[in-house]
Length: 110
Length: 119
Image (cartoon, rainbow over all chains, first blue to last red; front, top):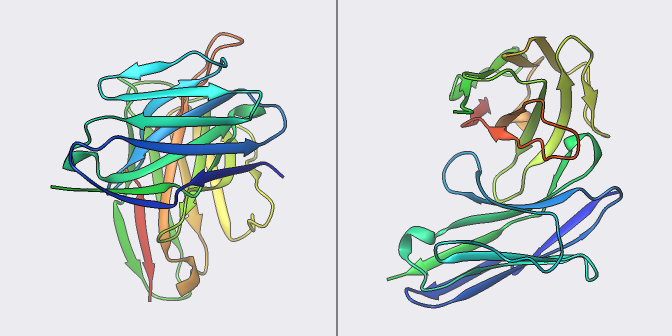
């Protein structure tokens, strides 16, 4: 059975802090790893990672995949209150199936 | 582009009734649609995968006779929760993906979700 585990499950920081969210996986037929941000409604896409060691960056967010360690991290620098959300990691396997982790609830306090 | 809508956005029904949720891809043809369920404080769990014109593939533990999925066209899939009970109360989210070249990622575009409450 495919499995995706995220840590920590929740995190409370102050504005300006840097956070690192972790995702590890055990799946068959790995195709890609994705990060999503979920606020009140459906997830919004952040990154897709397929190759090990190549950092993807978007503003204050960045992510990298380590296929040897079967893991990925999502970094957010200079956090803002608007970054408060649930961050979901998902692994895509054959048939475009996505297996999601439990998510990390990030709270950024002013 | 790549917008997915769901209707209704929320629904409250009595126990024992059936509820239909629609998922539409508004500006692209979705070869595959996915249905997920999310309970409070939990992650998204894939319920089933449906391809246009064929029967849906259900995940282990999901009752196909209770959660009827129809994918009659390339822009519409429906999920019907039959004889709903309070334990079916959840956030139901669909996603749609379109045909891409071999070896490229079939990005899933998520709908806004439908919150079902069964009394």
